[in-house]
Image (tube, rainbow, N blue to C red; front, side, top):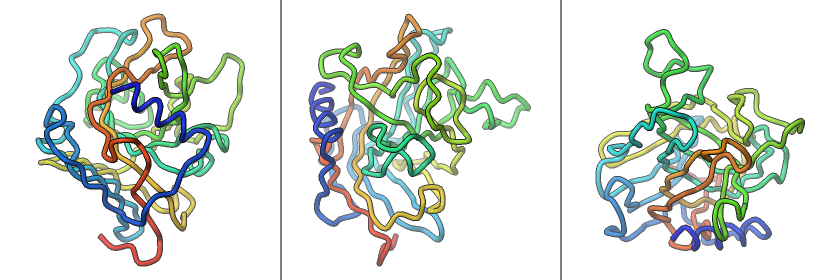
Length: 247
């Protein structure tokens, strides 16, 4: 299944197709673990926010990785919304790859150094709690045939990065958006201003696991397993348009 996703992303990296005008993607259940089994993916406007939402067949967020005790080899579980938005919309270099919003959990490390999610006075021990990221995805055969990764930042390179970049040598942002993981719904609220007030964009839904390279070098973070794809082929059939968008 990872290979199928990689093939689809490979095509998107060269030509991102716009699909039918619908802000909902409905998916048939029964494909994978219920916590990651997508039944509906959508983006809608609520006040001044865009709400990215995935509904699953089970309880959203009920499964998190087992802690391994080290950053090397650590697992990341994620609910992901790949988009057609340009990577420059949130502060990365333009045209850097596929910009995706992600809701992630990874108890072995913390990559939100500006936030204290569990309110214990420490900002470096919250990785296991669900939190938001923007990531830029790119191809890398080192992650396996047709493999995918969060794009690496080569040593001494100085790409444009968001102000809330957490310092990791990859194209990742830790924006600290308001989120909700309860019952069968995973949601992230993104201020329209944070993505440059787009008139429209396309999106899809993916549930996946990623893994930190045991050698801690490029590629640092590879997609290791794909649980479900809302569209089935990552064709980004969901369309959000500013005019007339309602919840």
